[in-house]
Amino acid sequence: MKAAFASLIAGLALLAPAAALAHHSFAAEYDTKKPVTLKGTVTNVEWTNPHARFYLDVKDESGNVNHWNLELASPNVLVRQGWSRHTLKVGDQVTVEGAQAKDGSQMANARTVTLADGKKVFAFSPSDAPAQ
Amino acid sequence: MKYNLTGAGLIEVSLGIAFVFTSVAAAQAPATPPAKSSGLNASESTAPAGGSANPDVARRRPREVAPQGPTPRLPDGHPDLSGVWNGGGPVGDLAQGLAPGETIPILPAAKALMDKRQSKDDPEANCLPTGIPRIAPYPWRIVQTPTHIFFLFEGNIHSFRQILMNGKHPDDPDPTWYGHSIGSWDGDTLVVDTIGFNDKFWFDFRGHPHTEQLHTIERYTRKDLGTLENKVTIIDPGDYSKPFTLTFTARLRPKEELMEYICQENQQDAQHMIGTSGPPQNP
Image (cartoon, rainbow over all chains, first blue to last red; front, top):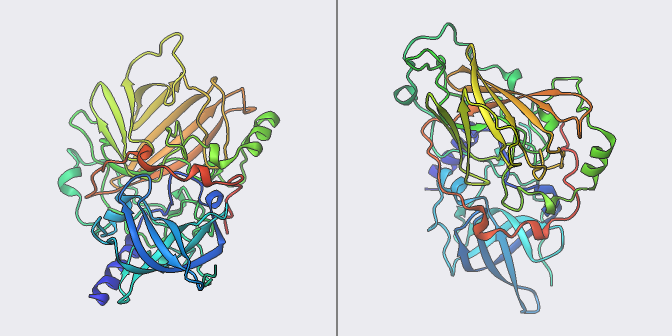
């Protein structure tokens, strides 16, 4: 399954058209110098425009729970890449890699979302990174 | 509070497609063979060659597989521009469409306004229309009839442009986001002349401005099955010292259909933006 998925992603990378993010300037909202890795429980999924979002409860080392707001691409972009509104569910334990909002709020753009069993959901190919 | 920081790199969400491009002949078959098929020319890319380190900049991968074939034509002989397209206008920076060595003849006051503009105030970030020639990074469809041509936009916003073929501009049009457009054919090129713009939209993430004097002349040429060139001339003596022309290229997205995209539904971005977009960092 994993291999099949990797093939799909690799295939997408080969065929993906001009890459562009969204309806707004990425640089003005997120700070790529603030990469975050967040491990927690999904508390809500919003399959909405202009971005799909999900919310994560993340425990810090003192046991306090912090609530994070994670941004994905638009549902249309995600669907075209093979994801669906059922891909991520409330209660899933996930690890998110992304970039935090510049304003310091507990909000981030999620680049990869990995389930506890290692399966990646909402991941974008490394080929989406700058020039090959 | 402690989070594990990693060396995650730049985030770039590709406006991807889910499935392999296959034949588009069924939907796009030409009624008559065109005089020639130019094929894709990498130099026509709207984006800087070789990609970009800045996710705000649209880029085209050299290895992208594009649909091949001749320019489709209608029974009346005009090129058939219909189909689902991606790109064809500026996203991050108007200057993406300049020929090498050219610059945008922006007037000092307009430059000062642009430099002052904050990304959070970009109408597009706030789910308002792109105006012209800006394009959102979402697919759009051309619907072509003898009397009207429509550009249907999936995203940002879920709206449309209407081009009246061989129509006439009103004497005093109300200023609007997409203006008043009339179309005509110059050989195989669709010429779209538009006036009657408001001054609210920005040309790009950077905030290149314009005034209500804006007049655009877009020249659309379907170079081959998969390639639609847009050479657009910007005339706005209010903000630019002379007319200038930009070239952008839209790519056909066969097998795709437009999907619903209601930007206002859950917009949470603008309120978190800080500062300007700044110039794209092209490698």
